[in-house]
Image 1 (cartoon, one colour):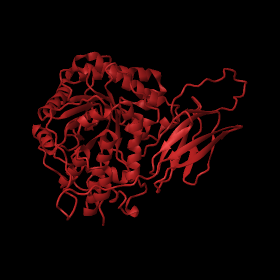
Image 2: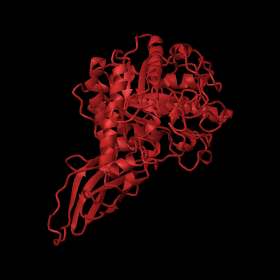
Image 3: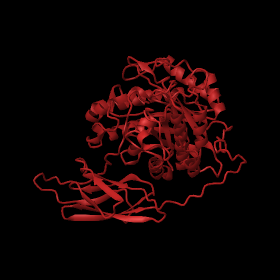
Image 4: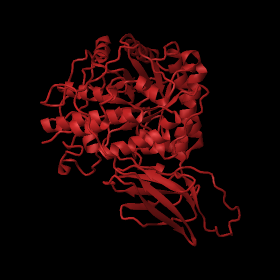
Length: 536
């Protein structure tokens, strides 16, 4: 996670190889061709909810875009100087009717034009399940989490099965990733030393996976060996052992070493300096080789995750937007170096699941074509993203309301309710899950709220988001930094030393576990929408 808040992430350029004239004196001819994002008939299919999707064209100049439907609008970005790719961002209003509808976009460059058909589904007719208990006083106890007693294992034959095997996850946040003055330390940010009791409590509550963020700053030696301090690496191995003893899955990563391009994983300068990129790739391989070696005998309950929120300090709005895709290319190379280094160590690393992040772990960057999945002979690489949106609720707790029953005046400047959640997760399903690549949300919120109203909407958010992710075939992992109170960034659910529940969070815990694990056939996302949203 984050010492800097309030992030917004949006899509940028996709890289395509296009030919260009070698004759500098010759004026380029007009060009307008579909690059990606549409079917062979130039059709785009969108859901009934409002939202924004996109496709790409190769164009000699910025296309003019006209729509023949009031509910359909689109804008075009300036073509990339690297490959002449322009992104067409298509926004649709919600279709309140049950009938599907179609609209047309006409793109024009000079004398060239092409037409794209946008087909929007109708709103499905909902039939709410009839409660099957005798309690007519409310719905709160009708469904609950399905607590797994199976041995920990990240496994499955399909992307959905692999994600579901992770169950509901929890982050040991601001613990091994905490640091001061460039040196990471377990207690640097106020949490007490973790012990076995914490992980036993997590298992008893119904969690299945523990993500262990680790910052390696101050514990890596000089080139070319980049030797990791044995005591620090040993403590990571010890915590993994505690997670294993509790019967939980574990994820170990490299965390704040890439924060804002301030440390050795400096993607901004790697994109500008080939020598810097080469030395960084060498260090990535050396560091991950040592981590993998220390953990090579651990079973398939353990996954390794390459990096955390890699960006240049702009949270997706920095130089990555105008550098011709160089930062994305650097991260793709880093992810490949990670996979290669871990696989080369051997042992159980040859076949264990590995996680790789998109740029700034943003869903849009994970699905817009800028992320290239590393090649892997084992075929066991997952995509890692984060989800805290909308930021004023999901990250900062500056507002109290979220969802269709909330008061829009209490939602902040960016309203991103249930339709936005479905739209974002649908991108992950379409891009990765349906192509049998597992996806997990390595961090999510929101933090604690200080009022009954805020707590009610927080519980609803947690249940709706985790259920929507489950239906999309995506795993979820809550960010717990151990912080108490109702201030921003107060994500604490459990005390990290003994598992004591913090912030009166039992209802929040139950909500997310139910959404992520309940397998009752009557427990649908539509049911959550209809029955769990608070009314004030």
